[in-house]
Each structure stands twice: as structure tokens, then as C-alpha cells.
Image 1 (cartoon, rainbow, N blue to C red):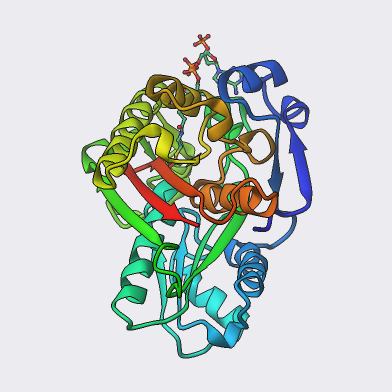
Image 2: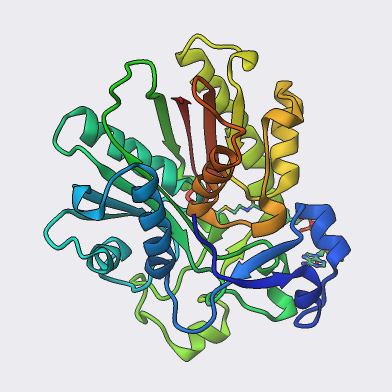
Length: 321
Ligand code: ACO
């Protein structure tokens, strides 16, 4: 994983808009987040996370056969951030694919990588989730409900064939419901309508993130529960058969609601939203890295990943370490 060094606390945001440390902590659990400084895009953050992941896998960049890059905040409108990262890694020629599934993007990307590896088309697939939210956020009070939630960051893994039959991705389930696209979105710049972007559209708020917070919250809780249930059933497992539940870090209260409703002990569902905010596609791989690096997740452990995001999209994975 990698997050940029600049730390932004809730108190720092109090100076920019009408909000409070107390409100942000109570409603979301967030205490601080990291922002880029200067011209750094998600592919720059991803470069460091990718190098770390490749080294941790005991590989060198030349071993990577494909890059899959999940982001909702790409460096450019086009081409995709995977091409930028490929160039920065010096891997000209290998396929580079962007995945646009927002906070569920890492899980969609992981599933695509799994299929490429299982089909033996590629051996080592680099899967990255990286976001620079801070340059899109609006720091006026009108956007405080969204702005306080998000941070910048990146996480990466390498998906490879496992020599041990037991250590593998046991299952993945992906879902989406496009009926809810307008509840969480940034519409401009975009090709729908006469103007790709214009001053009028900017003034009207079309280029700022929009979120119907309570609506998103309710759907997130319901869908996360459903997809964890689905994953457990597919593997003939009960709640107690999974050692760790790593949920997307959108809001501490969402994850606590899911854990309480399903009888998942708090200690089995770690969170780091306090330190990073919501890093969208990067949240799950950052949490995965931290729980593996700290020794919490170890060999033999069964891990459930689950996420929900704009689209709406939601997904799960069960991994055996
Ligand atoms: N600081 C202070 N007050 C605020 C802030 C803020 N940052 N934001 C909103 N408020 C005020 C509101 O104006 C409102 O005031 P009013 O009662 O006078 O009108 C009051 O606080 C309550 O606002 P609500 O929106 O009702 O607050 P709620 O308890 O629902 O919490 C929140 C808001 C945190 C956004 C919550 O709804 C939430 O977490 N929603 C889901 C977020 C989420 O999961 N996002 C997923 C992103 S995933 C992706 O793909 C990008």
C-alpha cells in the first residue's frame, strides 16, 4: 500500500468549512486522511504500492503479465490509469486494463485477474486500487457531507497460481444495480448532453461529487449483508468459519451495522477508516495489506472481503491464506 505523506485531520477541515471533528467522528468514525500535494495522480500512488506488492510476492516488475487498475478518479479522462502505471513500471507491451466500478472496483478487478490466471492466459496479474479524491472534492460547506469522508491512497496485490491447492481465492460474487446511478455520482465532465464541461455546468454543481447519504447508507448495509451471506452459503460456511471480515471502509457505522446484524465479533472485522477515510477502490487492498503486514492474518486463515459502492455495485470474495 501507499498513501501520500500529507495528513489532514478533521480539525484541518474545520478551518475550511462549517464542520466539526465531533460530527465527523460520530457519523463516520474518520479522524484523519491523506491528501496528495502537487501534481500526483492515482497512477503515481499506485506505482509505489505496486512496487511494494511485486517485491512482497518475491517477483520483479518484469514478471508481471498484466495490469488491472481499479479507480473512480483516473489521472485522465482517457487513456486509462493502467496505461500510465504500465509506463511508469517500464512494462511496455503487457495488457493494461482500467476497471470503473468505484468502491467495489478492487473486487471486480480481483475477479478478472483470478479468471486470467485460472485460464492460464497470464501467470502474474498486478491488481491495483488507487484514488486521488482530494483534487475533485469541493471544500465549501455546501459539500461537507461528502468531502469529509474521502481520502487519497493506493493498494496492490499480485494474483498468481498457487502451488498449494488449499491457498487460493475460493469464491467471488459480483453484483450491480444501475437503477441507483444518480444517488452517488459525478456527472461532469461527461459526454451526455451538449457540453462535456462548461462554466454553467460547474456553477450548477455537476462537476462536484453528489451523494444521497442516507439512501446510500441503507443500501450499503443491506447489500453487504446479502453478499456475505451469499459467499458463506456458496462455500458451505457459517459466520464462525471465517477468521477475518475485511469490509470496504466507507463509514464505520455501516460496517458496525453489518457486523452486529450478522453476529460477526468486532475483533474479526478490523477497520482503518479512522486513519485514511474512504479511499474507494484502494480501501480494501490497504486494509488487506495492513492486516497481513501486522501478522493478524496468517497462513491458514479464511478471509472474507466485501464492498459496496456507486453504481450501485457490490461484491465479495472468500480467500484462503
Ligand atoms: N459536518 C457537520 N454537519 C454536517 C456535515 C458535516 N461534514 N455533513 C452533513 N451535516 C449536517 C447536515 O446538513 C444535517 O443537518 P440538518 O439536520 O440541519 O439538515 C445533519 O448534519 C445530518 O445530516 P445527515 O445527512 O442526515 O447525516 P447522517 O447521519 O445520515 O450522516 C453520512 C451522513 C455520514 C454521509 C451518512 O449518511 C453516510 O455515511 N452515508 C453513506 C456514505 C457512503 O457509504 N458512501 C459510500 C461511498 S462509496 C463510493 O462508491 C464512492
